[in-house]
Length: 37
Image 1: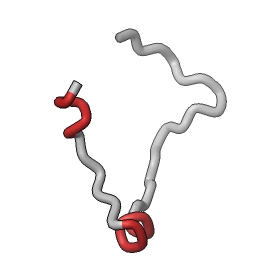
Image 2: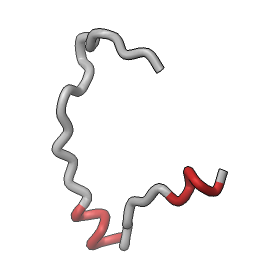
Image 3: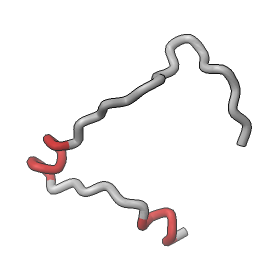
Image 4: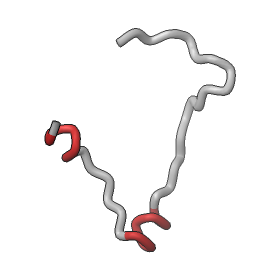
């Protein structure tokens, strides 16, 4: 993986709030899919 300087329009920081998805849909993020192949 190569890291380069940020481009115009790139998101530097994210303060995403998934509480609505969690409350309304029961969404719980996880990484299990990475281990399942």
